Image (cartoon, rainbow, N blue to C red; front, side):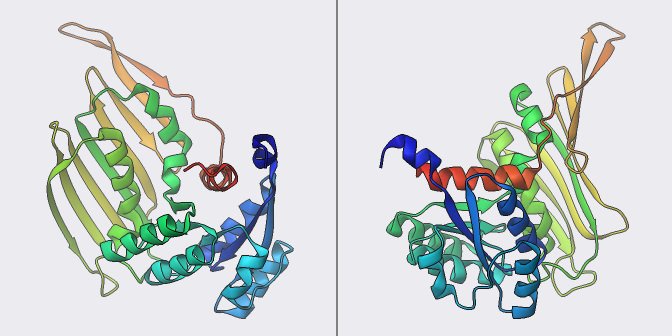
Length: 291
């Protein structure tokens, strides 16, 4: 196949799991150019049928149907089943995007990586905030930030209760922090408690990095309001980032001195839906065979 042909190849995609996340994956795949949504699968056939009807695709009754129908699949099942389902699909020869968190423990995450490498498949984890316009807007101005304050709060819903709030919500911010600081974590101090479930529902962590950066991160799924914010401080300025509004504000020293003057700049954030950009990147990787 020529490079030009490979770049234009239509990718056939299926969605495994048709809860809230899976339904949104199906919606976006239907919107992407060069993609065919070939079907959805769920252990609840009625839920699968509802999503299939909404997005005009097939209900798949067995995972074994996928190899002859699809090139790639999104895995949006409960977290406890990510490794089992993801490994099965990779072994069948499909490229896989698995929703975050990748797995419930390190050994299961390693199993997914091993299955992808052994079978020569693309494996992507759905860290959707990487594609948030606010995150994209601040990337060019990162200048060794040294202090972070992060809050991710949500109203309680009966969703993702198979894992604690760290895997459910805080994991987004940990992923972004590791990318922004790009240094080893040397110390973690954390506390969390269960409130409405048997797992940790609210948690706070303090991370210290090798270069001196410090991050305070709070996550809660038992809040009365929805908050998705990060503030970070670097030399002569601080940046306020709102994931929910998808915007960022830069506040910096405009005129130094005993009584410095400050300037405010709203950063230019691209008008894109994060999930759309994430799945577009996955499809592009599947098409080009580049991770």
